Length: 453
Ligand SMILES: [Zn+2]
Image (tube, rainbow, N blue to C red; front, side, top):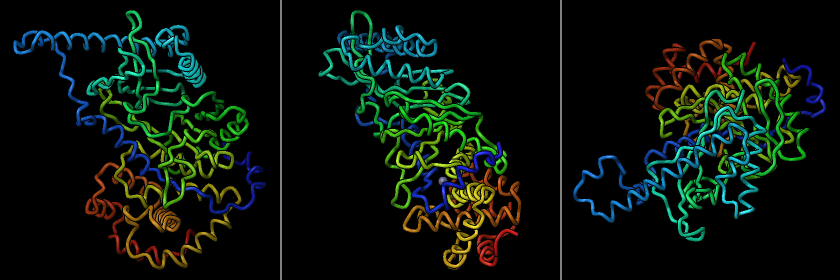
């Protein structure tokens, strides 16, 4: 789809104004990575002290009988919990609600209701793979309020949405289990403390959902907002070709979250002091069995609830560009990351009857921000007080590079920078390798540049 068929919507939408959106993507990505990658070492302050229960234990003579009994009891408990997690995951994939609920605390009506909703939501989205991996370094914590046997654990949930995700995506959860008869059942499916999560939640954890599908896109919205979901599918289908044409990459499928619930949105996603309109949040896929090491296999796009009804193909083209580039690594400077996303977005705007508006923006930036430019925007101050100008300047740098060197060179530069460390000396070297100029020469050329021919 070339985006032309839905153009009427755009024309009635009026002239674009500075939309209250930032695009904090690798900032968001880096934060998420820290949380997840932090899983390898978290809990060092007391929580990692579970003695290793191994087969060789009985050969250690210094272990007293009581300690040994305790360890064996814990080993038995963990095996029971693992069986419960396995049973729940299998039930989700097979679509067997009764089997899924067989591992929930039947005495807790609220929990059963929440678990039923979770099950129905995931079935509605369509899951190719679901897994729960208990974090082995996390010591079970007692939850006396939930009963004498209740234990909270940190769990990594892996979800691969059919036709969207190329690989399972990890989410960190906290679950509390208690012994009922000979079975460990879930008595709390959202133990915040053990999960160490932010306030935001997965879209399927937030009550009933509406799902709209398009080619390579799936939009999750809130009940009663199915129409907006379908609108966003069209906008997304108009954005994808623009992203693919520039980057020569695109995800096979992308999940867009556009819910009314504030909890679908991580409030920490702000740039330059104002909330972002949407963010591309990397999908981390485990690369080892206990899900402690990850790689980025794609991204989902989460729209700020405030802007869910006005988010358009331009915003989505920006975020989809981040999504397309994020598996390459996170070493690229922010001016390149944001400048490229802005470039794809503005280029699409020009082809959707906004070329005059884009030209005006370009003129304004040339008059002020570009004139005072001394060096390429530095990562540390990019999302600071000069947020709006940072994005604009970054856009013009990339536009200049595309005009002068071509998209293939820009993409090659991006690939190289993304995979290296964010070290200024390395970046200089890579810049010179691809563009045959130094940074000062590039800045000087940019100042003389009058815009695309
Ligand atoms: Zn961005």
